[in-house]
Amino acid sequence: MDEHKENLHAKDVNVKKMSQTGEEEEEEKEKPCARICPVGESAPQVSSSQPSGDFSHPVYKEIALANGHINRMSKDELRIKLSELKLDTRGVKDVMKKRLKSHYKKQKLLQTAAEGGPTDTYYDHICVVDFEATCEEDNPSDFLHEIIEFPMVLINTHTLEIVDTFQEYVKPELNPQLSDFCVKLTGITQKMVDEADPFPEVLQRVVAWLQERELGTKYKYAILTDGAWDMSKFLNIQCRISRIRYPQFAKKWINIRKSYGNFYKVLPPASQLKSSFEFRVPRTQTKLSTMLEKLGLKYEGRPHSGLDDSRNIARIALRMLQDGCQLRVNERMHAGQLLSVPSSAPVEGAPAPHSPRSRD
Ligand code: AMP
Ligand code: MG
Image (cartoon, rainbow, N blue to C red; front, side, top):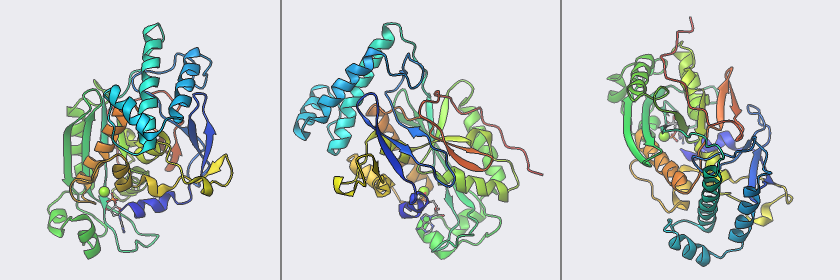
């Protein structure tokens, strides 16, 4: 699974730069289908009182000093400090460092906000989606994947819990017969898809499910996926096959691989750095299994089951939120193209879901 998704990112190149708060940020270089946009994360619930990109407020100097101090701490010192603060002590050194930095940053920014700086409202819910699709062993480059499982796992960002799940199988139209490889990989049987409805009908129930939970109306929410493919490839192709327009509510999402790499600063060994300002983010470090492992978690369930994958992705998202990461929308589809969303963009929720119109 992960290797498969990895291929999409194989050509992605990232450039490291130092932020005003003494942290390294990654900036994506132009890819065939994405614009250059810095993607970073900050503490939850609070935004700078300064215009985006303006770090002149003295609080940023204080944060930079604290970050510098944390950068010099040993693993044992980090563990002791985290324990004193009653924070999670699990994970590798980079994860612990980031957790501590985020804690101080959050405290500082909360203090600043309480002293008069405005706050920004964060998403109330995050909806994790991980599609499973028809496939062949070596997926020919022109293979038209059709969605066969539509799972959703809903996270409440206030209680930091999984509060609901949705799962439906989908009957493929173009290739209704699943390959043996696909059945083995996903655990989805021929009977499951034969008994399922075609995509447009399942999508209608997805929309109704989201509407019943008042997402996009009463509650602010964002969609989250593991990589860019779920939306930019699987949903995009499926909508063309089903002759429906790409749904408006799925046009922007949080790609957790990007957020994870930026937040925990997944760095290759110094020897692999081409120069002090350029390096390749090792994409193997943002595989689902590796992300879980680095956070001290184990995969639960059956890999490549859409619902189990979604649950495990949700567990990573929860840990990142607990560690102080403000997961934000960082990718979008526009005119059939995958684009990046800059981290300076406001925390905008997805629109209320509606069933998309037919293309005809
Ligand atoms: P995942 O969410 O990683 O389980 O993958 C989503 C979909 O990508 C699967 O349902 C397959 O259609 C396809 N896929 C994943 N891994 C592979 C693989 N090793 N070979 C071919 N297709 C794959
Ligand atoms: Mg999956």
